[in-house]
Image (cartoon, rainbow, N blue to C red; front, side, top):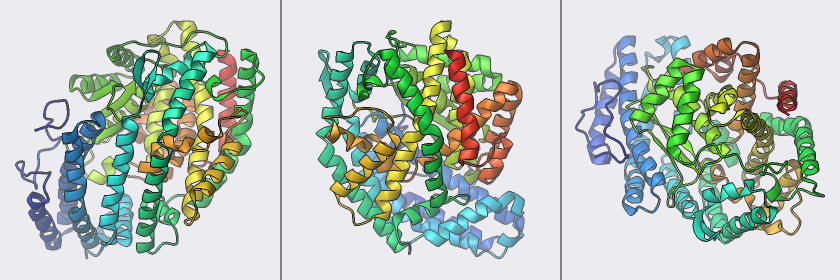
Length: 576
């Protein structure tokens, strides 16, 4: 029975190795097929047989991954449903732990296989290095720790998914409160902002406790694998073959030098337009000229239809893919109580189809989120015919180019939601958001660098380190009297809790997306063609080559950053 609010989806490719009747939710049913995989791998006597075995391995892992995806989606769509929570945790606690050593055994079998060296390095080089890394990092004693980490991370999802406040005569989710930050009445904005801030403050102890638990588990994992700290382990485990911690620290410096002056200019302009002596946190999301909030849609059906019209104009292939997703009910866009916060695209690996999850409440950022997650979906669909399962996935640094570039490529078609003047305003809002996200990325990434390279730190020391980063990357916003709230703003960033060290990728990818956008300004059709060509490669090539295929430079220094920020400022001036 499907755990998704949609019908059963057939496998993209009929199974050859795994029986269709196997119960993917119990290890007892799966274990014999891992025995078969191991025996088949040892029996490979030709390069062709080894290649076929890799496809069979991908068939098994894709089927299991889709089972996990369905349970995760059901749990995040309905955090208050005990059955959905039990189903997800049962998989995490009963299927994944015994599967991990078997996956390690298969990776070790491959890495030591006498025929491995005869595989075409141009085709198998990326897979080869990933498998060798898997063997290098695996420790059986970490399986239980990683299972506990997933369980604790789910507690954070449950906690944040249930946060509501009573405001304006009704109980509202935190996501629904976001629209009040666009209200022109400053007293309403402040009251709404404080209501949400107070609600988060009530969970301060819980969030700090969850992070301390997660940090302890992660540090044990790193130590077991022979690393001096979790940062060193995380960079290795994330397969960051093409950059390291020092590159990220230099990226933070480049953002401080190149982006922060632009941020302060934009903040100064806003402050002047609003006639304020100082910007307060509740002054950063409202229209500075006092115009009513942008209201692109009321019902999520309108959001879907508007997105469809944008893709109809952008590209016939993308248009057809989005329409197919709608027909298969692969979208859950509306915000509601009991739904986990945020947005994501999760690929159903065996059907090779994307699912989009959102919390839309009628804001311009909801349109941006739909375009963003659709970019991920188009990426999954572009590479769905790739026979090797690992190559249907891609490093996050380029996955986010797919999504962020889609936001930018579609921006000149926002008139599908607005009149001309409002469309220009929406585009300006989006570009200001692009500028503003760089400092936040640097703050979150630098915070994690600090937290995991200072393993013995206490909560007050951690708060001081966070506040120092807020000073460095926060710009000219007045937080006087709001120090307790400012000191735990990181509690709202789920990546810190659930996906450690997964955030700098957004900044690296934004550089790629801006380059795609800049290329489109000179040759729109050519830039889109290169973009789609790169998406079709999936994860089969190293990051520098993926960037180059999309027409982008693999570099995140100030030399790359400066001209792109200059182009953004020029476009902001043109938009008025």
